[in-house]
Image 1: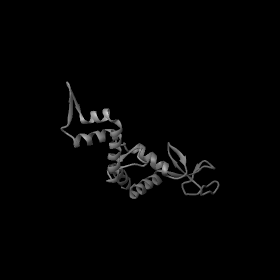
Image 2: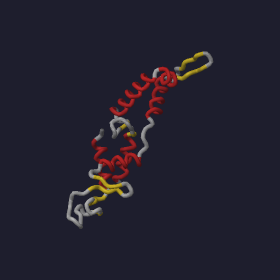
Image 3: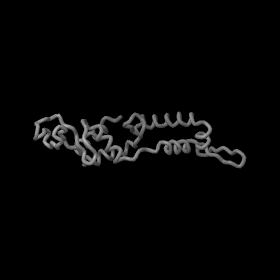
Image 4: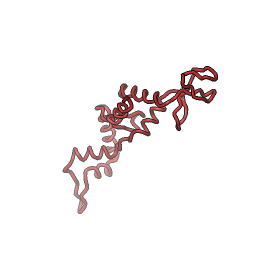
Length: 150
């Protein structure tokens, strides 16, 4: 994962959150609780909650601000681009390559899609924050980070 993007997302998380003393259940905007004096503070995000650290805020920002890539559709478009003229005619049925591959060999289809996603990620086109469960366009993440820096 791109460390520069992650650092940018963490900066956004710090900007959007406020220090919070869980013991006194009060905001501590100075970085120290005015009631008990503690500096062991959580991060508070309005309307979402409180928790230690900022990774959960980064996750929330990504999930609410960005749309994930429809990996199935992206892979179908890739296969269609690779084999634009290929179709299979069985009797009166004309089947395109995507339908044949998905229906006749779903294991091969899943393997090909996995390799496609790995390639897109290694080339920097896609980025995942949850070990490949969900992908986002790297350009969308960059726009989000650059938009918040302005």
